[in-house]
Amino acid sequence: MSRPNAQLVLSDGTTFEGYAAGHLPDSGFTSGEFVFNTALSGYQEVITDPSYAGQIISFTYPHVGNYGVTPLDDEASRPFCEGVVVRELSDVPSSWRSRGSLEGLLRHHGVPAIVGVDTRRLTRHLRANGALPGAFGHGDPDLIAREAQRAKGTDGTDFVTNVTTSEPYEKGDGDLHVVALDYGIKTTMVHELSRRFRVTVVPATMSAGAVHELHPDGVFLSNGPGDPAALGAQVAVLDGLLGTVPIFGICLGHQLLAGALGGTTFKLPFGHHGSNHPVQDLVTGKIEITAQNHNYAVNPGSLTRAVVSHVNLNDGVIEGIHAAKERCFSVQYHPEAGPGPHDARYLFERFDALLRTNTLNVH
Image (cartoon, rainbow, N blue to C red):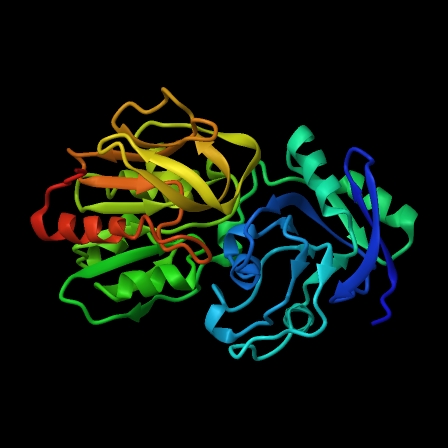
């Protein structure tokens, strides 16, 4: 397949050559914060994860698109990422589940891509220098270089407003009622909750009072994109919920819960984006292999009302907290794991037990 020449430029001036694929924007470029993902499969789930809003995803696995795409693997109604970088994009997908090509999905949703890039070199550069803003495209190279200098990272930006549901909706018919605050919730997350509970997914802007009016047995805090420090309004909502109803948070929900419990967050150099991170449960000593997607983490020592329950064995980052008095707990990683291992699915059962006994059992 013949593709236009394209260029990728990071904000520090580092340049990569490639070819334009997917959607070709009229402007000739797209911009965002570049991050790399180390998962070996699950590219569709990664691309459609709302947590990548504002970012450009570079896949470290060299062959992407091999098994096509299917609506069954979408994690949202559309991708929210700014673009995709791959080494080799398969033109001929092969799988009995496939209903189309990855490039067709990108074009349908207006997501630009650049292929033929030396993604190993790009990954090494981001590991050494941290996640960097930049731009890529098929337009004039000077234009792309200028836009790379103008590109911004995710610090201080509220992306949740752009990805949250506009109206509440319900899933499942369990005997317990859970209200899920949608900061960018993944479809697999809703599925895991609705298998166990009657779930009402509500906008991230819903007040604590409005949540209480729904009479939930528990509250769930979802994943989502961007800087938790930019979401003071959401932390204030949790201040009004803490201690009044059991709470379980994942990813951004974990960071916001930590904020409500007195914690602060910081930005990791290049984040955790992959499906093979080892995490240790400090209570049981057990090690789980986990799926992760986050650029920010909770500051060690900043929590005043919670206990650290899980840590990342690669770099010591806090991966879980709990507060027995407030009947709440959260993890930084993804127990629903789409894609990824299912070692941590037990956490949904822990939430179920918390709602039924009104006691947090972390053993």
